[in-house]
Image (cartoon, rainbow, N blue to C red; front, side, top):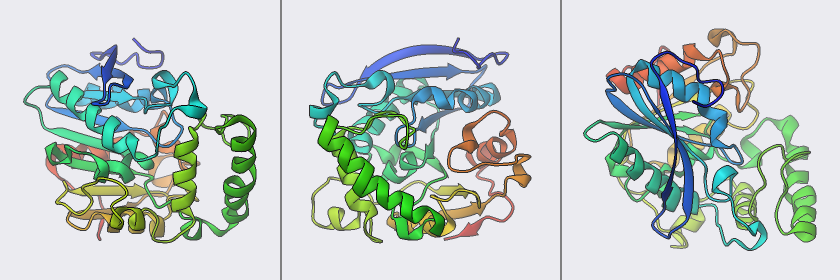
Length: 301
């Protein structure tokens, strides 16, 4: 059992599975007693799957089979030569999220499949080739990466990250190292460059979709989405989240704003929704999955 998941009645298993292009991905399966649904947790940019283990174990204990996994180039799905790996940002949705959903369905035959997407893990549902197999989506701290819809105090730092720090990292190492200004896992160059291109415009990824640059399903029917954001998250602001929800034109969409105080926390920020002690939030997500129950204050978008 993974450290930190000593939840009664929950077991965990380390697995590997292949995307359709042959890239081997690492995952963790959590299983509770008498599961009634399957839940795929898709990570934010640069977050390894172990970050989500506490939430995964909690959902499993409620009665679910839960899969966490590392995107290609991240964590245990890493590349031997990150600078020349050829990974582009949408590959995480087109190939990795698609493969993860298939692997989860195999581990939980006959159960309805839900997704929890953190940050880019929600943005990229529209890139999945098998998104029609999803019953419901929960987006957590999901919002456009465009700096103009983030908290204003972040703007100087973000611009320096894109055009100063990141550019120097690529020039010197061929990829963006983890640690320091970028606290996440090391990023492949293609991921960083595409993310930077999108983040420089309010329309974000839409021009690339319209040009046919990437295969996608954003323009097709999607499973219902309920999105949670937090006032102290300077990235996934309500405006940024609304922009992203707008990419899913053919989906039922709802937005919920939760303060840290409502969740019994001093701070949530961009990543705190998955830390220990967030059962109040996880419970709302569970109710959305199990009964389609919208939380108090949910606004239709």
